Structure formats: C-alpha cells, structure tokens
Image 1 (cartoon, rainbow, N blue to C red):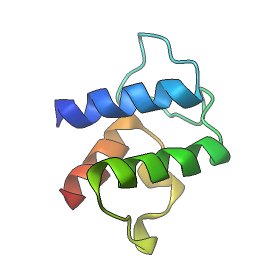
Image 2: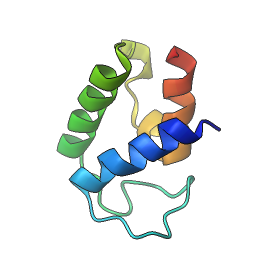
Image 3: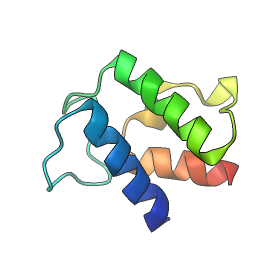
Length: 78
C-alpha cells in the first residue's frame, strides 16, 4: 500500500468531511459523511495532483468508497 497516496488522501478528505483519527483504510467513506459533491471535488483534486485523468470506466462509487480502494485505483495510474 502506498503510504504517500494514503497521506495525501487523508489530508484531502479532511477538507470535505470531519475525519476522526481512527478511520480505517477499508471504512466506507459514504457512511461517515462523504457526499457526491465532495467526491467530485476529491476526484478533481486527485487528477490535478497526480497529473492524470480517470477513465470513464473507473468512475463508479465502489472504486471511491474506501481509502484503500482509492489508493489502489490511483496507484494503477502511476
């Protein structure tokens, strides 16, 4: 698991939702407050930071539902 991506995602998620320090990598982000508008902003931030665009086929909620799933997805583009 890429720790740099994890740190980046946690910092970005803090902008959009209140995270406690006990969040786990496989906790469902939508269950703890991430909404669709925040997800769009997060996706744009990730794309801008890592200089790529997600394929349309990857734009499904399941791939953005946990920190772990987002890390795996971002890592596949790097």
